Length: 434
Image (cartoon, rainbow, N blue to C red; front, top):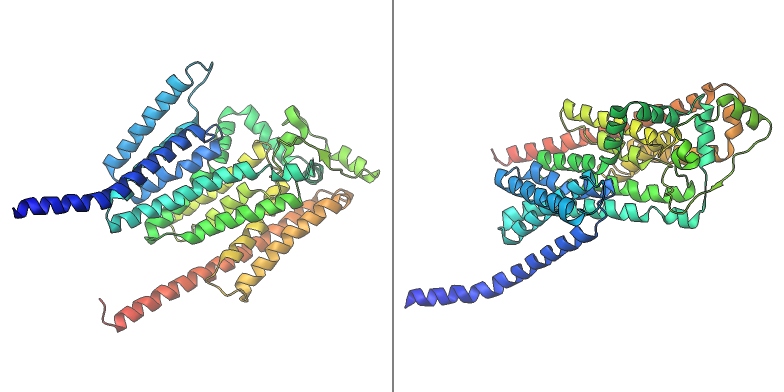
């Protein structure tokens, strides 16, 4: 009789506990199906952003059965998409963005279902994966959709101003690297691959923090998102699209020679804003690709040397990718350096705002960013008045203090972290904690 009563009691408890979880699980499955049908996986950025869920899962929860299940589910989706959904599409192959997106979606669904039925400790670990993974996906998707805001406000762009500055260097860097991409297939493939893999690299950096620090590195997310939001406001101040959109199919053909442009400027020619299609995003100045890559590398100091080396190698490949694809001018990448330092200083709360180690980089990086906007708009004649040495000196005068400021703020921040950890250890020792 007691056994029967216990079974009835357990059955009574089953209903209020399990039914909400089942409903939540059904909701996650519906979200999965909607994302599968509606996300633009043809955009490589979106696929890389969604794949962050799988990256976090591999780093934080390296459970073989779970990962193999995700891989099998993603493979099934990829085959279904290729041979059922797009079977009638001629010359349709496997798209890397779609493959990564399917992998991330399956991983997100598996982790979400595990979190629903997990106990409190495991649920916290799963939430540390799911929340930032969803944040990365929505951030990448939102940024890809909001980039056309500047094109609606400014039908004309300032590409000619950036083009003229790059020409004042004596050659056009983006055209030179673009020619490498065109002439050497392997260089072009790797350059474009690293260029589109930025969201995955950011997710790897976040996952490394999760693995090393055993907590959620919200600071890193804050830095990335602050750079994105502030960068989009700067796109409104200096709307530019990139050389590939300025010259069209002629990129990376022969650009206007330095001597010709110098002759035109000396005779009174001034750059003008040019009308450009509203479908073209005004997201060149400053280069958020370079800014995000720099911020990722700067914040990899807690990791081993080989990790930091890989981060700076990614900065180098981003430098080549942004130029070789024709999406950016060299000056876009230069302005990204003081901009990234200002963002780092703005988000660093371990130092008081009045501290010179934080205030000087914040004010200096912001000032250099604004000064470059003004100089590019009104100083074209200055760069062509003498030799190409003048713009190169201006670039050096921007990069040198930028690196010094960043080294100082990171050194002091890391020092304060060590002092904080030492204080905790001393307190624990004084309290008799082994």
